[in-house]
Image 1 (spheres, rainbow, N blue to C red):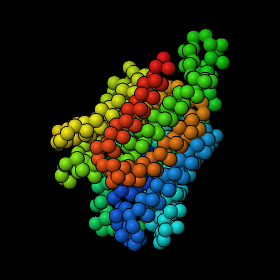
Image 2: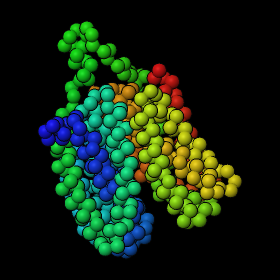
Image 3: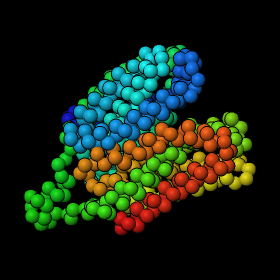
Image 4: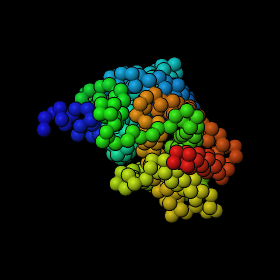
Length: 406
């Protein structure tokens, strides 16, 4: 088998290649920040609020640009967009490494989160959809299984690098990783242009429909608008919960009575639980419609969070929360790609994903600050109850979506 078969668009190298770039993308542009933020704050000589505020500002910019990025993907294909995204990510990381003041820092953060919309999951899901059409569900599951290792690899890697390098040198090293690894991989494995029509439609028009499988029925008109609103609402509400806990989970667990070391151990269970959930879906989820997987997995989030409201939270209860929450998070990444494909079809998929993600990115940007204020002003239990309610409303929206799409 020649290189073109191994690395050509839609062939054996597509998912492994995209998996590598997703791990590097999320690891360098998102997860590394949590490890490097204290050193950055100390080096730049300002309060932590400015460090995290610049990060939030970048997320807001990413939310605003997501629909535009999706339109570019539909128009030009994922190969030029994601390749350019990796090259621009290298420049943005280098710019951050050279930031000396607040303006330069904020501009670099905006650039990083803006280009992340060109290379993160939404863009990668569009690449799989462009390469494999309506049959991309299994490919999306396989990709998220690989991408789930981004935090597992880059949190310890970044911590280890801090032993011999400063944060500026680490970001320069990560910039080279995008330039030397991700740019070539995107050029080699990605499809160039979007399909003009689903394969089933092409066969039907060419052969009069005789013997061809029926075209899947996608939502149109008012039903399509209602489904979009329900899906955007559920993604945004779940995004608030995940964004708040990604920053404050350890603080929350310690406020509930767990020791610092135990809280760290519980937090570390979330990553493997995500991967386990994705593996189960990949192996057995084909029997369920994506919308059913969506509300069932969504229900695990409020159930897990509700465990933290039980009187005295011990290690076993906190561990059960981490497992339920992690599985829900892991499956939600798959749902994010497969449900829009099931309901709306592959045509215009990139723009659709951009419109769906835009409100969620804005909500995610605000969530850490809002939750921090709630923890300080109203306390741990009411703040946790809010997360339960938000994730429950998201689950109800997904359940209504599943009923309406039958």
